[in-house]
Amino acid sequence: MAQSVYLADDEKNIRDLIALFLVQEGFDVQAYPDGDTLLNACIQKMPDLVILDIMMPGSDGLSICSKLRQTNPDLPIIMVSAKDSPFDRITGLTLGSDDYLVKPFLPQELVTRVRAVLRRAQKTAVENSTPPELTIGTLTLFPCLHTAMLNQQPLPLTPAEFDFLSYMILHQERAVSREELLQTLWKMEWQADTRAADDLVKRLRRKLRERQSDIHIETVWGFGFRLVKEEVH
Image (cartoon, rainbow, N blue to C red; front, top):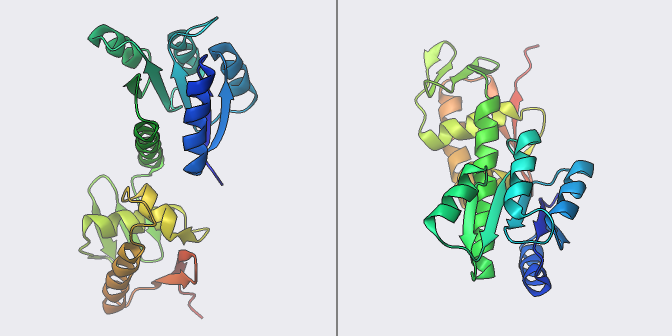
């Protein structure tokens, strides 16, 4: 499902241009001519990210940002403005925006910032929801210590291998796509090289097999992977 972005800017040409580029990049975009209309839309349904111009009729972007933060402290927000003084930047960030972009800017630059802010938000959400121990079968991971145990023995893992197994345990009820792994864990565009996930899985399968693990990484052909616990009969 495409990630949703709400955009508020009183300049129609800028609003349309930003929306066009974001839609071309696969986002679901709703554009509004002022912050109050965007705020009302957020009350009905919260988006994945908000882009706010500062100078708008009615409530300015800073006021809308502050109101959104009061009820949605984790909502990713990007401020855009023609004001480029250090005071304006600090004010925007202090009121709760995750990024501040000065006009004029290239639309592709905004797309890059949007992706970066969403990745940070996803990583923070995973970290905040991660319990002190992650267990499936005889495999236990300790996120705070970044260590792993298999069959009550230490299991050496690279940082990428540890992150992969942590994510798979957290989502063990479903298959996880290669695209999701690359974008969420390793901050790569999946079109660049899906072999990164495949190579890592091969190494992990070898490690698990050598330790006679009851946990297997199952390939879901054409999609991704699923963590499976071997049933004992």
